[in-house]
Image (cartoon, rainbow, N blue to C red):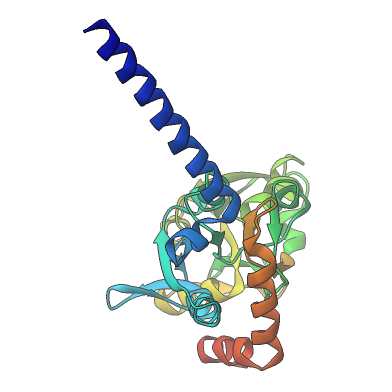
Length: 260
């Protein structure tokens, strides 16, 4: 019996070792190569880049990702989650890449690799009609501590933290969804919301009594994020460049964002 127990322990140890090695190989080669599926992490509360419609996730990012997957001969799977978890999902190996209106920042570049930029985003300021806030300069006025709503872990969060909260000019209220920040603005819990221009336009169109200020808060470039050293990055970037060159990306953007 003792010999059987020892043999069983050795067998289990070998099985665990082989399983770990296999997992390492999968991590090195990327999830996609093993499964034939391109896994994209996103936060589908960011129209028109990604949002739910008729029971599925649509928008600029999903369509670009679908075009990439097709050219690579892969099936696209989109995992929706809180924005704060998107990059973590890639870092943990649960997703191949992240597309969620992601801005390339020096801080993110320390941990992740990025594709070529495929779109330009503008962070804007939403206020209630009749607000004393008429420009970004009003937010940086000394002696006034504004309450600013942002979506947690977005660049709106980062920029307002750096430019306003760290300077003692505002208190930043962080929400898991951009729509929650807008609701806080409607109910008077915050004085303004800083968010990307395109979802801002959608939120303002859906809610009366709000408008977007003419002056932007920041301008940024969107790209696809990958785990540092991912072998998938170069392949996806090659295809993305092709899609930009042949006009596919612009046609997708024009489908969701009107020139006016």
